[in-house]
Length: 83
Image (cartoon, rainbow, N blue to C red; front, side):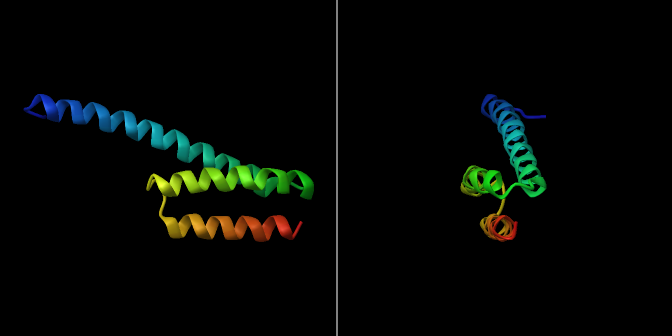
């Protein structure tokens, strides 16, 4: 266990950030899943910018890699355009 007050504070801060990152990542994955399951092209096209913004936020915070974000956005765009 940590020996310094600053190290203990860092442990607490890291845990808070881990929980928040996990929540944001899971929420984005659920939004992607729902978008892929969407059958109506108009609804999917309306949802697409919201999901892309969520993916961009994850990439900006380094929760996911920027290349993964690009791949996800590309595949979702192709999926929506193919509906």
